[in-house]
Image 1 (cartoon, rainbow, N blue to C red):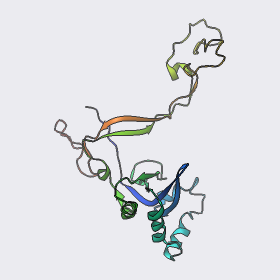
Image 2: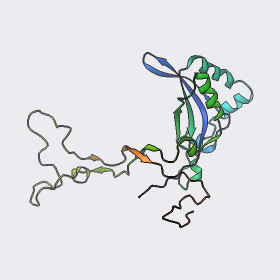
Image 3: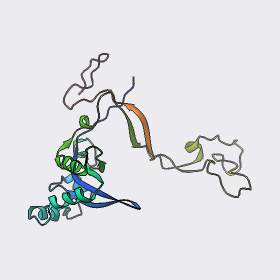
Image 4: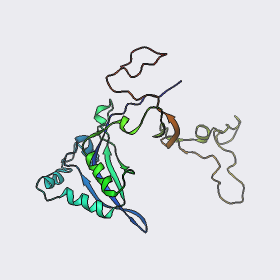
Length: 231
């Protein structure tokens, strides 16, 4: 059976965000960060890293060292007032063979625990520690994968929607939709094929089964039917 092999270095938890419930939805109360952030993480706070002064989080780390910023007091505020706790994590993109050096960041909600205090304590225990893929997913599980399709730019209706070309002798071009609608209603319906952006779309694929979770350096790609060693 065809499979997709994904390289998934461990993520790193570097912060906690607490949210309070308001009549208009969730509002972030405070964010607490670890005192040490990697360079790939700090690159995320800049549009242009090499032209910047690279000062992101230096004041925060100094404030924590001088005890001007009291992490435990902020965590106590989250425990007292918040109802939703999320961990701020970033990828270790330097471990992949990619051009990009800027880490991706995301918030991951903590849904376990009996109380908010337990959620915060659990999140605090994850700080600056690698969160490996086998801590989150297990073999045999079905997951949904989210990704971005391959971008193809501005495309016409033939390649974008697969409509039929007009006859060869058509006046003013043939890679078109001949009639885009009736006189009334006096607007173009959403279901009519039009030219525009093709690709680079957000897509979710449902129910992908995890057949195996291997570790780097081990011969994790070998199966009973394919005994060749894969690096």
